[in-house]
Image (cartoon, rainbow, N blue to C red; front, top):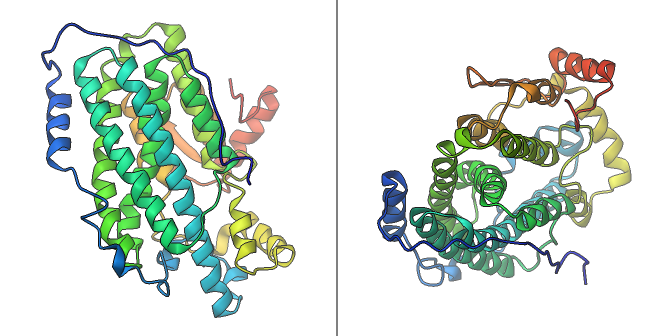
Length: 357
């Protein structure tokens, strides 16, 4: 049994009861109303009998690995196994993330002070239960799944243990849910297996509301927070992006290599070629690939005011040129000259990407 199949966290969580039952936030009320209208049943609304065990799960051409020569040189049967296992790994991490969202939203029902937020979080609890059911059923059809990756586990543990609702909302709704939204947006087009094609667009629609709930809850709240609390949330956002973005000097979700190895690939032969290509990406064609950090996470963090000027050099050292005042964002990737210059500047200051201030 994997050590990651079960873990526990402790949190001192404040519960807020309100003897006031009017819905005051019009945007959240509208979101809650929409959520009620768009409920679906994973058991009845998905035709699970149409699962095709011979189908590819996701379009390999939309995966970064497909752009690498060292992967393209592999026999076709090996490539097919590789992309299948990578897809199963991704679906497994989504399943674990959905359970985390289920637990965090249960906490938010207690911790959010206003009734509008409690209602929105309560509906999301049902959404997340349905998502857990859907991905668990799907991976049962596939025949196996992977344990939670240590990077995701560390983030989930930290979010669950936070004592204030704003931190939970930033970590889960604005960051992890934005990552999920980015995948589901492209995944709805990427899905090839018939059952996955049925329910992934429904999950995408749900996730759009979840991210909207986080952004709407925070964008009016954050400007009025005390400086100490604002700083904490900004640092939490930066540290979470650093961990899941994989651009700080170590890859994120490194247990994905377990999936590659399971596919029959000789990692000892592949890894040196992989590292050489990634280190010199001038010849790589990245057309059509979308980074969810760029597409959804950082824009939402900027919208709610959690990308301060003091973090701009750290984000640049990771390959993102951000302007907190103008709310502009450019993805330079890690090999850009300005990114390398930012890393050199941090070193000259005696700082690191992890602690850029």
